[in-house]
Image (cartoon, rainbow, N blue to C red; front, side, top):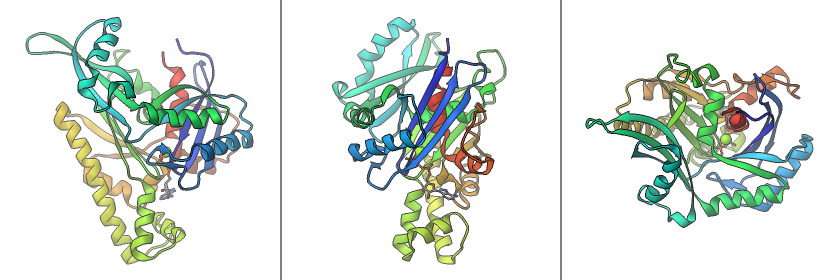
Length: 354
Ligand SMILES: Nc1ncnc2c1ncn2[C@@H]1O[C@H](COP(=O)(O)OP(=O)(O)OP(=O)(O)O)[C@@H](O)[C@H]1O
Ligand SMILES: [Mg+2]
């Protein structure tokens, strides 16, 4: 059963920390608070904590400024110290599965098992040609030390983590419309597979979702800040000038040509990830991309993605599955924020699942 009460999703990202507070357990979850604080460089790098003490002080400040009273948080992670792999096993009841996964997991992950925290979810069931019933499990394994550095910062800020989840999994709850998430269970027709892409400041999270379930996850260590730095380094622009060009508010032939070339290379990287997934699964009905993350607002990025992936691009609406409570933002401000909150809102919606 879904738990009643309030859940807080905590997205510690490269450029900012985002917190979403959702009143769950009602028919329709209500977003009761949404708060953001910018982070200086060097606190979070490539999705990992670089400076736990400074991070803790920003977390404290964020809680204070926004008068958040609750301290239990659901924390998101995404970095190169997490590995997500599919694993095929003969079908077995749930209670036997845990020990089977534990027994075999080392073959699938490059982290010594004693240094890893492992989680898994059954994502598919099928029959082999020999009529053997099989299941596919998506394994997520994280380096214990990396998780510990997040826990250190969060505990130091007086917060209490109740769950840790991959950001790529969390965004499914906010970016995939709720009606679609449960269609298969209810015998309805699900809308094929979709590819969620979140482009932040430092990381690009990719997640292919089939019938409401994540099937494939890739984290690329590249986001909007890469392009800002590129413009600054190659064309001697200031960070402010580079941001204006990325936003399409000012143009410069050299800068725009450089940006386009590098966006195409980045799209190529995303395409290769998807091609890998398709080659592994023979997936045929990947039918659209749902885009989020403020880095995805870069000029021409949606168009280049559309060309490079040959898929329709839809701009994600992470507020679609919640009702809005009393929030301290104008509708315009909220529309501006929406791109960057898919992960925090999705984390908070975790408790709405059975
Ligand atoms: N309107 C815009 N046009 C282009 N780029 C933008 C726009 N607004 C923000 N950005 C870029 O988006 C990035 C920040 O996005 P976001 O807030 O999603 O990242 P983050 O969550 O802090 O980082 P990450 O998830 O990668 O750890 C920055 O690189 C910024 O330059
Ligand atoms: Mg982010």
